[in-house]
Image (tube, rainbow, N blue to C red; front, side, top):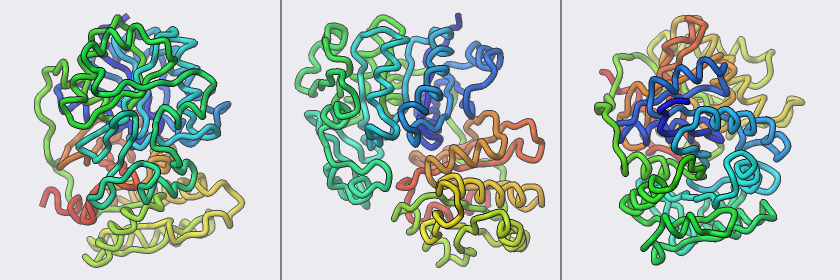
Length: 418
């Protein structure tokens, strides 16, 4: 058994990175693994840091596939015996009965961690996510929308949001009873959580202070506490009991051009690509299929060698025309271009757009774990890759969710270190 304060599984990579960042901002040391590592490796890390994370891909999996992905992680976490086990979910509660089911997560957690009600906190105010009386809201382009009316999430290609009441939304994914606790009933939140008869409870948060209230309540419960939530949950838990690590640097020593590979079809990622094009970057569609990768990689390498940054997009690509699942085809093409650029010695700063794409590209590159290198602003974090392959080891990565970052994000990253 370790003195580990928390362990989390992230259902996609960008969300996993956000959780690591939220803990680090409050002085908690941590390490994020790319998939479930060898038990000895994870145990060694757990004895050296406050929080360990495992970045997974459950958000894009069917329930049966989720069982195979998540159950072994829960078994290992139970053996590590941290105070808190967090299933890191997206702050927009991305999930459905047939893909990324949070209802199934609740069922699996009750098998391993007991039948106490699972607290669920999706709010993340600094990212424009709020829950009030169980209704969830999400900002887009500075405007806060009810979740089922937010332009991106209401039209999401795999998990479109048709319901803003999170208890109803998650209740459709399980036969277990799902309830909620509003802010107006937070007088004895630990007692309410401990005595609840529901299988899981949605928790409100409008401000960062509300996150800390929830974090303190979870800290008052007998461990191990299993909870589902966004980076806002990580924030609340760590802010309620800060660690002793120093501040995160704002930049690294890396300079030179940036390579962006995108599996995101988000309008915000497209705005970022357009802003990069206006700044003189080479912006072109990602070429899918092995036959086109070498030629595309040569063009990319030439641009990077000349000092010109590159964006490869996928929202303008027909990913269904290659006999593969679109996500897999995009990820393989993106990873192939990145690897060739790194091997050619012309790319050490890489941005991967899209949570599911980030998961797969990072694994395809052979990255074993990630640590925080810098936090330039907000929820933007630069990571250092740790890998057995010396070509990949030390690579600087920014794994970006589709809706994350302002329009000038790509050019802002390029400017770091100048």
